[in-house]
Length: 331
Image 1 (tube, rainbow, N blue to C red):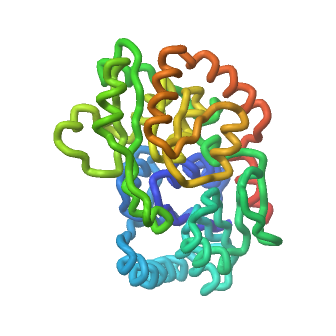
Image 2: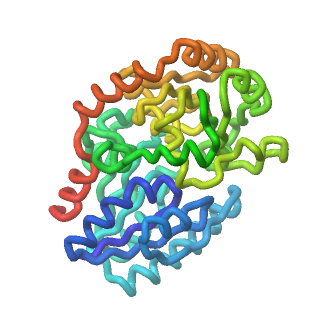
């Protein structure tokens, strides 16, 4: 079988890396194209996954014109490779549109309900839309649901082994917290603005060490807090005493690694609600309330409780990689 993956975001690397390796190990042929966004290419190289690089386009005008250019690029790749199946993740309209052009099926793995513009350009062309059970939208006959979360494809204990050496790299000795800042440049982010980084740092620094993962280029005074390598992030989230930030995926990752997690963002998501149900995450739109809860969790040393709650969730969810593999090879 020949499977064509288009990687549109760093999170896609994590979601599909074990699946890609499993497919290859079972003699299936795989083509990976990858947008040059943030650390996407670095993550693929670190996983020793070969790929064909492609451009990304930014801003509303850039995204509109870029869609046609990306479609053309992927169409050329598809004609060379002749795939049996094309795969993309949330908002990947390009791979869905190209699948329609070449008359081959496509699977889109989605967990981002509020991406209305991207979804309107993706779902009509996709053959199947794969979502977690907690997904808030009913997509009809095209939708296939699974009892899991995409983050479990790479953070389940079966696949993720925390590396304690990362603590030495950042000279961590006591409590520490991870902050996540997003760029708010995605089409579904229009109209929203980011958190006050300076205020969060000022309030939390007296409680422990702060490390920041940021899509934005932050002012120089914050550079000393930055996480040096994207490969360190999940290990740091595992050992951290608290996560607070705007990124839903990173908030979910922290929660699934057993770290008290605060999601500070007005956007509502089914998987965030799912994690709230397990009491692994808090969702705030008010920065002052989020900060108050953060300090409360730090003072309570809530980490041990989170580890127990995480174990309950893991027992109730499937092996996502195994499920995706069987779905693909049996389609």
